[in-house]
Every structure is written in structure tokens, then in C-alpha cells.
Image (cartoon, rainbow, N blue to C red):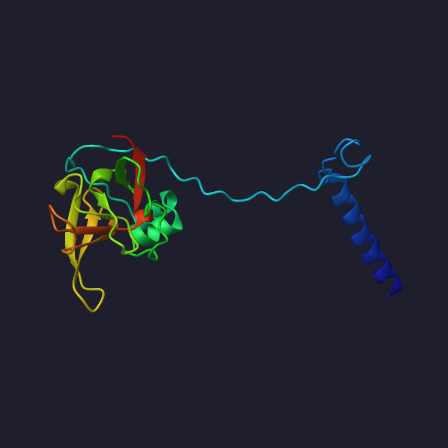
Length: 193
């Protein structure tokens, strides 16, 4: 019995010694940095999701739709963008990054880059979301009936990729009387005329 215990202990010791021989050595900083011969801890590598660069498309929608599966959209959208654009979510009021944006330029669909609104149609609606009284081109957005809440609303989507942008209401300023109430995460802004 002692022989088996001794043999097992010797085997485990040998395995540990061989593993130590073939393990990579830790990084060592110069003596001036930390102290002679002390290993420098290696920081854990963080997983970084690479979000694709978005190509902005100005002009009227040409009719060429972009269709992707949910898995394909998840690879290129942030979790918040996916929730809003693909699952018809809504960001909390007064939380969007574009709510207070007063710069001149254009607003594009976050998913596909199609131009959907201009800054000259943006106004302060006091609702908590960026609001516009008209789209850049009527063809660039589509509208459909939304019955998800107790009241019937009109949902606004990007005409090219079908991404949910927000809703449109008939309580906006003239000349249209409309309020396109959009989610900041569904839009990208580019400065310009």
C-alpha cells in the first residue's frame, strides 16, 4: 500500500515538474520599473466587439432593400441598436444622445446608413426623443400600423432595411403638423449642410 501511495505521489510530482518546464515564462520588467526580476502581471485580454463602419447614403431610396438575418444584424449592431432597430424597442425618454443635438447635418439609419432626416426639420417637442416634422425624403421611411400598446400608433421604419426608427404622431408643428418621434440609437448623425 505504501508503494502505491509513493508511486502516485512521484507521478503527480513528475507531471507538475514537466508542466512547469514547458509553461511560458511571465514577462519581466526592467529593474528600474518594478524591481529586479519581478514578473509583470499580464492584463487579461478583453473581448472587443468590432462594429462595422457605416456608409452614409444620401438621396432618395433607390428601391434596393437590405435584408439580413437576426444573427447577421447582431454581428454589426450594438445590443441597444439591435433591441431598437430589430426588436422594435424604445429607449428611455430623455436618455438619447441625439436629443439635444443642435448641429446642422443629416440623420441616417444606424443599421444601413440611409439618410432619413435633416437637422432643419428637427425641433424640440418636449417628449424626450429627437423629433422631426418631416423625413428627408418621403420614400426613405415607411409607415405601418402598430397595435402593441392599448392605443393604435403609426410605426416608422427605414425603407431600405426595415429598421424600427420610432413613431409618427399628428401633433407636430406646421407646415406638416407631424411629429416623427425617433430613437437616438436608431440614428447616426453626420455634420454638414
